[in-house]
Length: 484
Ligand code: CS2
Image (cartoon, rainbow, N blue to C red; front, side, top):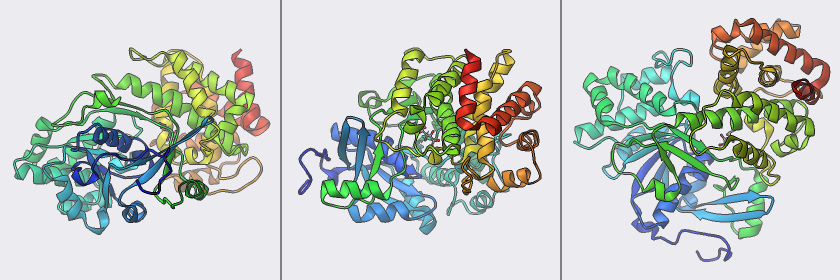
């Protein structure tokens, strides 16, 4: 590309010949640094069917960044050894759902589209976390059911587009959830079928029979881009790239081998296809994400701004190992995953000094993350009669974070969909015991059986008292000392 430094990789394929084969719902940094790169690789390998049309279901921000750049943006891959820049050409445009829902439905119903990927976070599935049922009283779901031709929600867009495809005699597209949730394929399928059944039972039957919603495990650490990142890249490139994303070198995508129609040659693109994604999912959620959340709260409470700074503290590093010792016994590792090697690799990834991954970014939305990252493992360990001191400290640190004050007394805004509820519950609680008891009543986070288990209550209360007495780093040190 004219004007780009010679060491910056860029699309060598003919972008004008690319077709839109993928629509992505929820085009944030993670999509641009992960799935879009795989589709860009497919285009570079000579298969022009896999251009991506992005969609934002809320705000026009990403469209406004990417449109003036013709969909091009830079992926900055960083580690201690330096940085590698690559311009990604897979994105063919961005539609903003609320501005023109019909245009997005029509794009998804196009015969060339074979795959719809999505990253809309747990909230975006519109399912009750406790029952897994569609939230029919949610105002956006109700609006979608009243007029499916102008949807607002992710499942609504999928149902609307599948409805048009069925009427046109087309096959369904494959729906690939890329959210960091257990059984993500099953969840989006449940939401889509529940909505479709209310629109027209025959549509739901057709989707159930012909559609495909593979489960996936997706992994790449993608910290939020800062204005400093953009300025630094500008100094290097000579142009300002508002759509840039930064990521670590590691990337992994495991997809259940189940598709409704055409797909790229995923295996040739480094994607792992398997019949059993769950063991991969559990290992990633409980080891990587479980440790991420625990050190995010402990680190942020004690003023450690970035993940690499947290794991550079010997007490927190040893704590992560203790947490992994606990989580590991709950896993059923898939063939091909060496847990000891995986742990070593994870620690090296967390230690990457060039990523500047903020503990506060990971601390966001903890109420949605805790169940699969820490609580599921705790329940399984208790059922096996095993201790949970390290996991309990992660849970207690999340609870402490809900108070909105760090150890140095800095007041911050808790960024969580349940923040108003947790603040309300904490309002009258004036001791560690009372705070733990109050938050354990949140059934959307704590399964009632776990919240009622005296071993769980005791472990979390003790961890909370330890946080109060010794601070986050001191409490972490005590967990590892007692584990020895
Ligand atoms: C992180 C994840 O912000 C978070 O909650 O734990 O985004 C994590 O970086 C990714 O899952 C890595 O694949």
